[in-house]
Length: 177
Image (cartoon, rainbow, N blue to C red; front, side, top):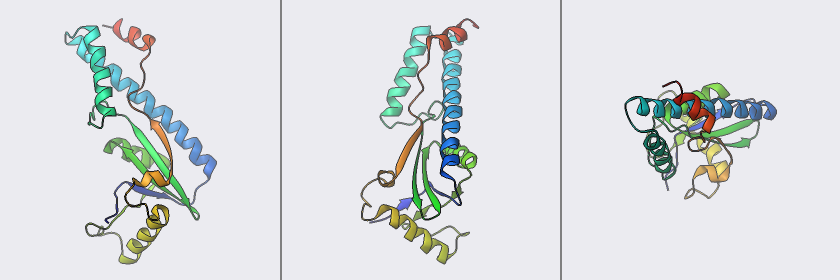
């Protein structure tokens, strides 16, 4: 069976309390940004003549689509981080839209550490390094290649689905129209 861990990262060395604090801080930032993106989207719809109720309904419809697995990159701020402590390193997976994944990896100080066996390794990774990545990910996955890698790891939703918008958010935005 093939192994495909395209969104794998590592953090070495790491301090767990700093890692945890970084996740919580990043979660607050990403959630606020996602909420703002939703408000901007609603604001744009209303400004272009869409009735308020219809604009709000479109957000709930977008949320339903995202939760069912359909992509809506203009609104989707969901971000899940899974991790596993392997020796003195943290092995990490990030599930998010590409821009959010890149930002999350940068803010958490992660280095790319993916592994796959269905195509050639990247040019900047030696055969020895590639073999080590294989061993590392196999240590985490064990015999569970048929399941998602995150099922063998601890996980945290930095941003789950579209954030709930409060009446205050909406009122302050619609009064500006």
